[in-house]
Figure 1 (tube, helix red, strand yellow):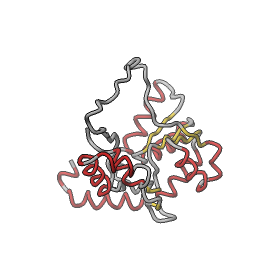
Figure 2: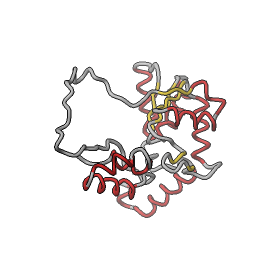
Figure 3: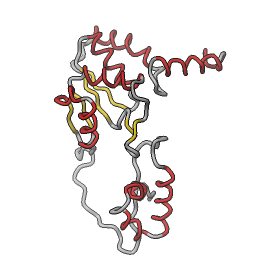
Figure 4: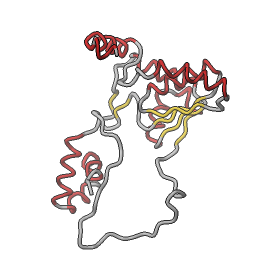
Length: 210
């Protein structure tokens, strides 16, 4: 209602909240989380809180609820919060709110989970005091829902197909991704060769649509 009636004011308040409290695009759902969680806790106690990022504001919610309700929580990193994994540069300025929150979240977790060891090692180097609670659970899938599947090799008279499953973000090298798609559509041979030579083209090659 407020956003509809006074959009300019609400946009200013939204940007101020991002600057002063939590610099992310999805913080506005947080105010409703604590009362709902406390109510649910009284009905049936939680054993554990698991928060998955992105969005990383879910980590902040888990940290606050963990302290409020005295419950352990796990931070599950699907992507890096403060590191651009394509350029390996920091996303935010040193000493900013994002680093304050990340340090607080990692300090208080019972366990922090990453999808690969490279991401885990970067966080160990940055937050060595929390290294003993950092572990890796690789991306994957459970075979039980679909059962055992027979392997069917691709037809020999067609080029290979590549698929991308994931979120497109502003941090991705989109130009390289689209260039790789165009190369893969026109001729699969240089793509296969580039996969061993250039990381950006390799990622783009995997993004070739079926």
